[in-house]
Image 1 (cartoon, one colour):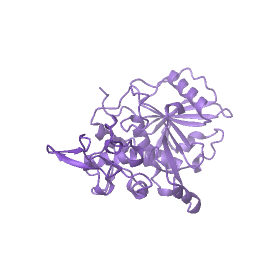
Image 2 (cartoon, rainbow, N blue to C red):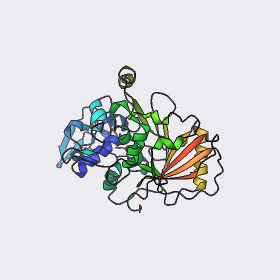
Image 3 (cartoon, helix red, strand yellow):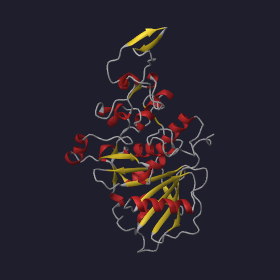
Image 4 (cartoon, one colour):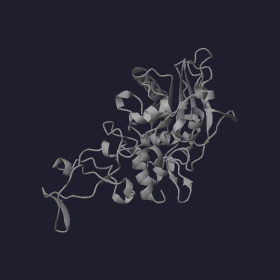
Length: 354
């Protein structure tokens, strides 16, 4: 973490796009031309040797010809490395990627915790995030705004160790991961400090929010082995999964424990325009079609004023991630509060994409 290569490797490890069980076979393994999608390969210098595995999954004959390494089919061979999968190196995913003592992007040499936003900004080097993503692209593409949000959720979930973290503390750290410098963010409503669970006052089935815990999460779309989940029962741990959703699931990211029902749904909209009422109608329609939901986070650059809010039983509240200021866009009457949308405005992340 003390240099760009270290930060890049940590970003890749948390993304779980370069782990051995998430990659297509190499040319040497298939005895065929390499697949085109090689954008997630990590160079050997980006990885400590302990975590660097060759991507080739079988013994490979390599020959020296014209000062280059070639396979027996005369195709060039080069060193391609990957991280071990979850089953192969649990230490990496339990401890090295962050926990109670250290955040996911902690640099022990200078004793500094970097925020998720800062690491992604450094990686993007001012290029910004794409605002016209290919919907057919691989869901785990690590260059997207959605993956930055996944990393922020991942890092915030681990701040209290393997016991999980209370929702109020989790949310403060989630906002903190979206700062240039990592710090837990406090929220204010009408210039008064509030805790995030206060937003759910009067909402059906949400009286438990102050005591709700977010699990200690695995990287996006990785799965803890069953022996880790067994610790939830035997040792009062709280392990869970972070899912980068398919497009047909009508949300970007969700968090779940051992139960099938997600604890937290998130929709990510990194658009050049503000999220307006038409966008919100589409989000609500998609959620209603795919989920039995009562609460969703919508993360976006900015949101418009909703002058024509028709959903009289769905509340909508806006939070500025940079200062924690809360503003109600629509609050249903008491007795009519069934669902809640929390919009988190991130502001522009870096300069606009070309």
